Amino acid sequence: GNTVGVVSKCVMWDTGNTVGEMVGHSKRVITCAYRQSRPFRIMTGSEDFRVVFYKGPPFKMDHSASEHKNYVNCVRYSPSGEVIASVGSDKRIVLYEGKEGTVALGDLRPGDKKAAHQGSIYSCAFSPDGRLLLTASADKSVKVWVVPPLEGAPASCAVSSLSLGADVGAMQNAVVWPPAGPPVSVSLCGEVNYLSIADEAIAGVSKVVVAPQAPISAMTVVSGDVVVAGCNDGTVFAIRPDSDEWTKLAAGGAAKPGSSPARPCHTGKVTALCAAPASTELAFASAGFDDKIRLATLEAYVAEVEVDGQPNALGALDENALVFATTKGVGRLALAPALAVAAFRPTPFDPTALAVGAGDVVLGAKDGSLRVLDPTSLDETRQLTPHRGEITAAAFSPDRAYLAVGDADREIKLYAPADGYAVALHSLWRFHTARVTALAWHPASTHLASTGNDEAIFVWSCDKTQATPIKVDFAHKDGVTALAWRAAQSPNLVSVGNDGCACVWNPLG
Image (tube, rainbow, N blue to C red; front, side, top):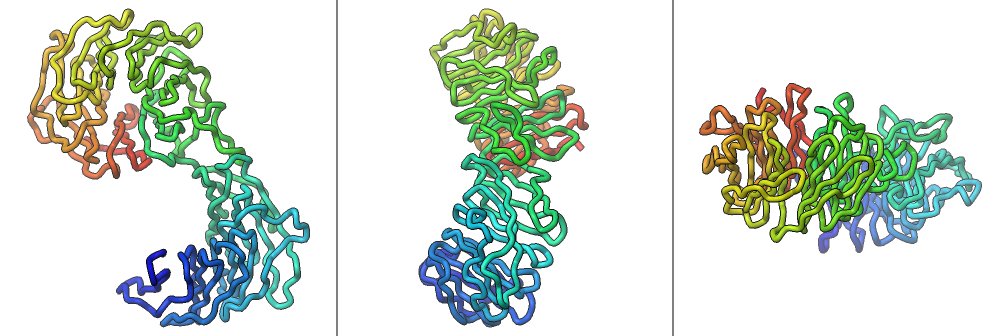
């Protein structure tokens, strides 16, 4: 820790009682290691460039060592407890005797100085047998060192290296070597790299696991099952029904294992996603704060167009068109023969939500108004009964019998398109305690799922509108941002939120 006076503490896991006095550092403690065999020992590393060795319990400072000339970023015991390794921002690796904490090798180096790390070393981990040491560095590489015997240790040792890329995101922040399974490193961009080890050397990367590293701001389901999610940092991820792992898409295609981290799809927040018309070879369209709308397959982005204003809503019109809303108006995109803005209508109000269905486009505004537009000309054909708060979500039921609209005043209303968009339900579905952020209809049009900044998900029955809805509390920390049903899986409800997670629910049993 970095509290005044106390920078580290050892406590009993079951009672919380302090076990000894941990003193010796003058600045924040960054790392610690515990010898799990008798005699028990602890070593800590700090921003004061020192490591401190403790004997116990109760643990008391035995001595300190100042071999490092910069921050000590990581200290680790070998599985046997016979060796301790420390690494730091001075690019040095120091080995200590495990029981007494004395320095055995002050600077572990390869025979070729060029093979050493060229940047700060952030983490280290011993192999299960203790013969190898894995290190991760800001030079975007991981290295495997053959640990020499402590008695009469040679001036150099064998080392193998693997570069994980050239971008800043490829900097290696941490490594772990589990007792069973391959060693793993974590990149600055959030990628988890499974490493292959052969003949005491790194053979390559066998697998890369990626996941959102920022709040998820938009989501859609493609082809009934493939979930596509967009994040605040401009990245877009997809997860297929036959897999439980995300695929990170980039402007130039999907990221390949061992390559540089994928470039974000948008240079700003992803504000909207929608599935492309089924008749096309495209999978989805995305919109971002970079004022661009992009078209993509599940493998790569294939086209983009710049629009007037920041886009905040998307919808599929027909086989050859999409409709979008921006902070300045509403427009229509032609998909063929080339992606282009076919029409754009500036609006005197601020569009905030959009829904496509029943042969119409419905546009919600910040002032609570609702307008029905002609899908071809985008001319206004009628105004609907307004809401008291900003329109935050709108969605047509699959059978086009209802239009559901949610607002910042926590209310959800249903409109009947076949009856001139008369209000079919109001003042009943008002269980949210914060603004409604997303609506999603069940594929059978029997239920409507809603969510909001209150971290709750409600599932409402259209047959029993006055019945108490099914409720999921604390679905996502800091609020839920989008909902969708995976039609082919029972169906299940998918939610994403500001916690950067995607969850699958089965609210109807």
